[in-house]
Image 1: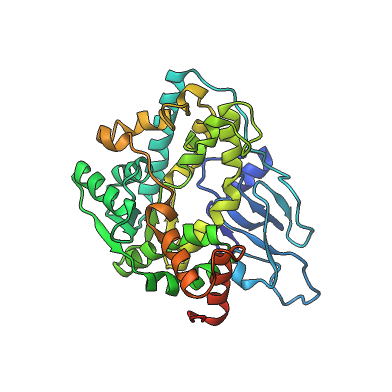
Image 2 (image 1 turned 30 degrees about the horizontal axis):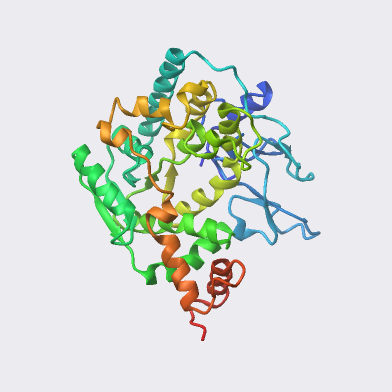
Length: 377
């Protein structure tokens, strides 16, 4: 935080971005109030909320960095700038996501390598004790190799993520702290996650719970920040849908589908940022630095994904730092790899929220938030 009203970047940088309409001014994101305007960076890496329907009580806050301090919070749009006391813009109104032409493969790879180095150096310049949320996949493994920080994995004892993290840490010659979960951890933490993020839907809570529970342990061990590999799948072509170009995407090319994925980040990132901050830690996401985003937007199709390999260019960079077996790894989504989704579903059913009930896990989380962890007959 640079001051009480602006987070993420220094005011001169944000003013220059406003004056030059520069969507990627070399930061890891920013949001807040500056010179009478609310602003949020193009990827929404810093959460910013405004009152959906501001009342007449002048003493109440008009905007906040956390949803819990507002009566009826809504996300301020990413890439927008608007008067602090004015209406909330409905769409990007200042910084659209850039759409550069792709580079040739060699130039694109060189640019990506340099960008990741720039992002890493930016993290290292800050005086923080950092730990890494480590799943054994290529994303978190590269973060771990670049930052040379302690590794923590979270999951149930028989989970894919715990097993994968152990083998990856062994291959990298690194120590690993394992945060083994039990069902009571989910029952206790689910309402905390829902409260911090302002979200009770099953998918968001399932994704956030592993971050929260690993963050608790990292904070208890005395660290200041938690580094994550967030953004790599969206930036570099990590999803099946960017290859299949099925009903989940509107684009007709892999690059177009990847761009759609990048544009989904502003809705996702507040969940992760608020979850980590709720544990008392600062989130660190090197792959979401402006330099890396710019380099990712310039990757050609052949360095993104096809039927044989996803995140091809990213893996080629990762192979410079990681054993081949780790650089080539895919991973399960965290809610499945940690078995959090399975166990939360089981808790919901045990509490009486059967699968035949629409969105039964969401209803269970909402009940925990309202009443605390109770059992239903």
